[in-house]
Structures are given as C-alpha cells and as structure tokens.
Image 1 (cartoon, rainbow, N blue to C red):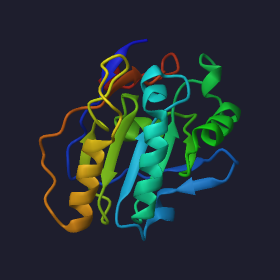
Image 2 (image 1 turned 180 degrees about the vertical axis):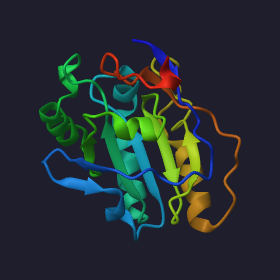
Image 3 (image 1 turned 90 degrees about the horizontal axis):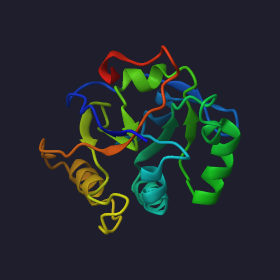
Image 4 (image 1 turned 60 degrees about the vertical axis):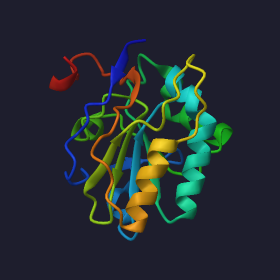
Length: 192
C-alpha cells in the first residue's frame, strides 16, 4: 500500500465529462446530473484500507447529501487484473453490502481518473451547479488508526456552504489514501 495525497486539482475547473458503466451495466453520464445543485465525485475502490475505514460514513454521507438534492457518484479506476477485489462483480456486492445509494461506476480505461487528476482512494471532488470545482480534499480528519471519528465534517461544511450560497474556504486539506492502482504503463505524469 502506497499512501498518496490528492493532487488538489485547481478550483474553478469544469467537471471532466464521463460515461461509465454502473454495477448493473447501465451507462451513467455527467449530464445525467445536470439538474442537481451540486455534484460530488468520489474516486474509491473496494479493497483500500482507507476506503474501508470510511465505508459506513461514506454511505451515510451519500444518503444525507442525496436527501439535499446533491448528486453523488463513486468511480473505481483501479486495475482489476492486478486487484480482482475491485472488479465490477465485486463492486456490485460491495455497493449492496455497504449501503451505497449512489451510482458506483467502473473506469476500466482509467481515462476519467486521469481527467480528474485523481490520485488516491478516496479522493473527493465537489462541483457547483455550473459544474465548477469548489472543493477537493478530505472527507474529514479520520484515518485508519488515528482514533478520529468518521464524520464527513469537511465535505459536509463545503456542501452546506455551497447550497446556502456562502463562500467555501480555499484552505482545503488534501485527501489521503492508497494510490490508484494504475495498469502498468498507464500511469499518468502526475503519478510518476
């Protein structure tokens, strides 16, 4: 396990487009969320200890944000040949067991992850109604073994500010987790 920090994509950037299959094989597109006041894109996977650590909190956060009208989508870009626990079949059972109510998508080409400069799992990107990036960073201060509770505080504060029209602080802490498992030879420049 290589511990990696988010690349902290520049704020204000437009959400890169995507059209990826969910756990049932349906294609989910960025445009499917065009009417939502905000969109949270989470790069995640099944096997990472950092994602496992926040699993229940992530499911709770997803439900809470969706109840406010926020669109939430999870994307798994890991190399499933080397990490079969992250295969689409395993993603289907993980989504059901974890209680994820948001679409969980498979980025087998890893091109969407590259477009977002996603680096770790979990890695969070919050976009406003115009799909401009307003927050990228950690869910909260909890990490495996640090005894901090999983609250989703940082993301919740950002979403609440966005939905109420308040300015979101640009002082944002990077997310931390396992590096995305790139296929050999497919690693992006920012990973090398």
